[in-house]
Amino acid sequence: MRVRKGPAMNEVTAKRIAEFIAPLRVRPGAKVKLGKDFDPRYKADFLKKKDGRELLRTGISLLAEYQRRLAAQNSHGVLMCLQALDAGGKDGTIRHVMSGVNPQGVQVHNFKVPSTEELDHDYLWRYACRLPERGEIGIFNRSHYEEVLVVRVHPEHLVRQKLPPEAKGKDVWERRYREINDWERYLTDNGFHVVKLFLNLSKEEQRIRFLKRIDVPDRNWKFSAADVREREYWDDYQVAFSEMLSGTSTSWAPWYVIPADRKWFARICAAAIMVHTLIDIDPQYPTVSAEARADLLDVRKRLEKEAPKGAAADPYEKKIAAHKRAG
Ligand code: AMP
Ligand code: MG
Image (cartoon, rainbow, N blue to C red; front, side):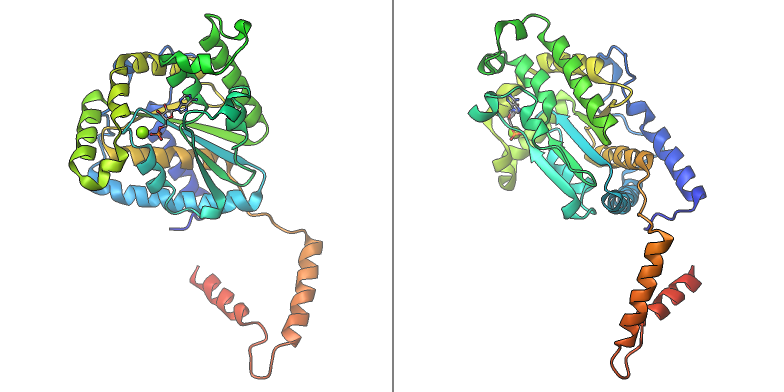
């Protein structure tokens, strides 16, 4: 489906998408308690899994069309940050949601335990190096938020960062929230929208997905014993996520908490939030000035004259006219 420019379609769709994602957004300044405020099994009442497939397809084609415009306009970029616990569905979300977009306009980066070179820099350096260009969608599969999640839950990571004493006091997490907020504000002010998605999985659903990774041989590669060890820190992570959501959901870059126990619903949510962002940017194909247009028409005349005997002077003219008649 192509996005028609008609205001009716856009306004109605835009409003429906905005309403659909509103309950997922973390209100800036809200004090979040994950277990109490967000249900991993939530889904919108009006949605059934079988309708979900159609809706996801629509979302994907909307994304594809908007991404073409984003690239053509070449003034804004979008950074999507995906965070989740193991088996939360990050990889699948990226695969599905971005399946329709031109690979030339998208970059995906995965962040693992930092290298020695990365540890020799400030903690945001490696993320800054991988930001999208204007006209691009960048995806961080894990992101700078690991710096207040895994690094917080496992303080030995902070030790490895070789910070000077004044930079690792008790207020280190509050300070990092502020620094991250400032950095994202800087990016937003300069045309880069930051979209933050947290795939919120329940502990029981994680257990089931781990078992699937063990039981299905083709999935064994996805499982590591370290994932089960990490699961033992579940409660610490819930606290770290809650404080991260409370400290870094801002008016310029709010967090969205996506219920992740149903993969199909999580994917629709992720697509809807991305489309919402692009509607907000509203990128347009550039139009050329009257002067440049006149030059183009001149060139057309010359090309038409070069048509070999028997060939149409401009085969496109007819096609475009037919297309216009068809509306
Ligand atoms: P995976 O996503 O399964 O490939 O695992 C990547 C691992 O790298 C996860 O265990 C993350 O917690 C870890 N990781 C990512 N970023 C950082 C970081 N900044 N410091 C320490 N560990 C990290
Ligand atoms: Mg893993």
